[in-house]
Length: 142
Image (cartoon, rainbow, N blue to C red; front, side, top):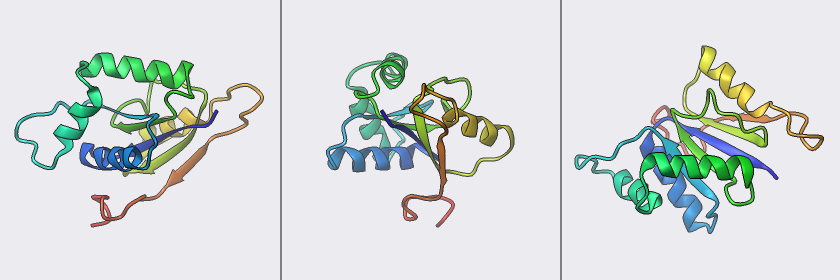
């Protein structure tokens, strides 16, 4: 089972990608972030993020989707992450990491290690894809 983690530079980018995946019918995805929506959020990310939580607390939602990503990969194939889970999160089946943000030093090393953990005989190595998926959403390409 192939799992992936797009790593975005902002909650705005993560929510835009989440919306695109949902509209395309790809429902086995979620956003993991330290984002805490406030009333001053005007770009729509608060609405997207709150809707995704579906009434659950962010902590409960995160625990649930991380468990699915690790133990039930068919139920959660894609974790869109923003400043979380790149260090200290062990999911050996995660095969792809899409970097859509600037990373360097220890953070980059940890991210590379994240997808290079072996998961049985089916996985020999992971893949790091380092590019901006959608330049109109990328804060570094504008």
